Image (tube, rainbow, N blue to C red; front, side, top):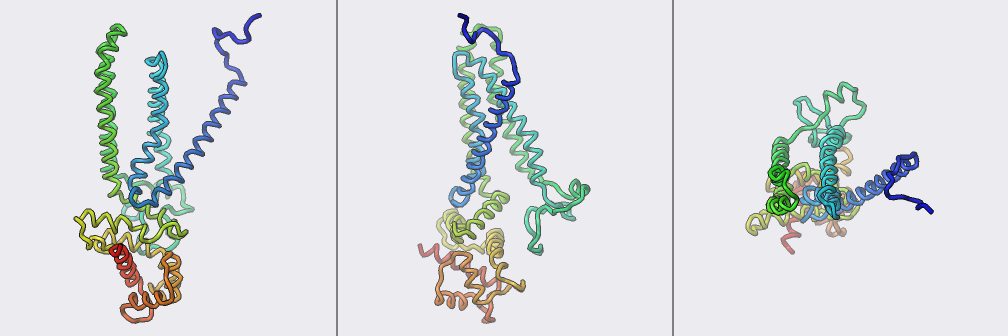
Length: 355
């Protein structure tokens, strides 16, 4: 009796095979979609941890994104015919890299575009005089405005460093490929004995380059304004829902600055530098304006009580009267925004110093 399946025969493409292939592709896509959402949710929670927030977007997520490509190359190199199968993994890696440099790049520009003001600058940050309904990207724009009045603003320093990084990462490939050209046509035994040294040099270079990349990313993440804005946005949402305190938002400013200045407690001043003051005022203003009904920059004792509850700052009636006395420096009966900002900054600094 003949076998049901003869491994010597080639499988002919059929309609059923195409359906199975499409089904597996859909299942694979659903798994990736679900996994990406888990990674996204987890990364947002990590942003709430002040000590590691700067490195989440710059180190953790890029490494997680590189794991699938690395796994493809790793598993394609396992088995008796690794030399032949590895070309499949490298080809898949090259294809995914080209895809990332085209389709997602174009989509990120389209999705990340913002309004361009009269000075030709992209409005990534809300102007101080902008109304509450201000948007980075206005709705109901004409096609002409979409093409001429919206766009993205390149960061030339980031682009040049990114281009340099891509060039440097090509060096290990040139090392091993140069050896392949040099010993082309020789026996497999000679190629194996000679190329192993080049492969070792390439491995060492890759290891050094990888850790150098991590170091540069961590260093740059602490001065990345765009990343800081994203982190602040997530933290404000967490503050509104009681998941994070106001002191937690400014943990790095209250602690990191002291360490950076040789333990000087005066470095804790949240209003000591213009950048820190602007950031602190931006976060506080989002809560203050909610209770400043007439927009005159003042709130009374009742509104202060609601504001403190919104900021999840514990207080009693005695504390509330004390806050009013401390904040109302001009004895007007109301608390101005500048008075509230100054009092909150001193309060947070005092809490941290007392620890």
